[in-house]
Image (cartoon, rainbow, N blue to C red; front, side):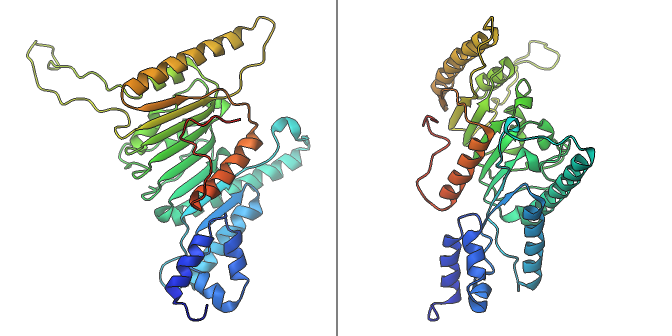
Length: 338
């Protein structure tokens, strides 16, 4: 290795640091010389959990590495914020008010560290996975653009305010090509798709998973490839024919949509909710045919009953396979989720 150029070694290390941080950490512990060579690329991919020590400790480490690095700060191209834990029903609760106060204070520190880190590394991010746990309620995801971000997975997206910016703010994700939204229950009957349009103007692949389906969502889905019909008359409707440029689609570059509903409702005494869900499933299949005929390939998959923990684990594993160039699940194909 002593005979290899530093640039060559860094290229090798960068290709190796695609496992969420384990290899980068190992390289830094190998020797002083290897640590120095690996410094610019050891954070090429980083996976963090919702615990305070994970996010805050990494932020402190990253700032330290930036202060000792000569020239550009260490590259961080792929970032994952995951909250893999048991579902709420499987976790014992503690009614002690002091315990809850401590948990809330700790979570506030995680939120602050997350926003600070995104501000530091946003320019160079290529892929981002973020759980709703890391997004402060009532505030946007960040106060800046992510100019290089190509792939985004939002786990348990539940609040439209995550994308609420002043009209003067440019698109949040100008280069985003692939968006995967795993829907939270709170977004069930709220707009979901259209709010992404101003912030991802070059989106080519859209996947919505775990959605409980609603008429609001299905209407959005139906209109995803339909451009508003422009009026051919003046504002006063004088009958004078005027030339109006053709309206654009919501996502002009969109080529593929994949929708996978959440689990079927539990059958009750009258079965109304289950019947309504089944009816919406049928409507979704019909919309898929219409969208495909309009020129955008759409796959409507069978309902998936994965737990939140299972979703988090699968997303994390496939994120690492994708950035490492391996053969993982293509979340934008018509592959069924078993």
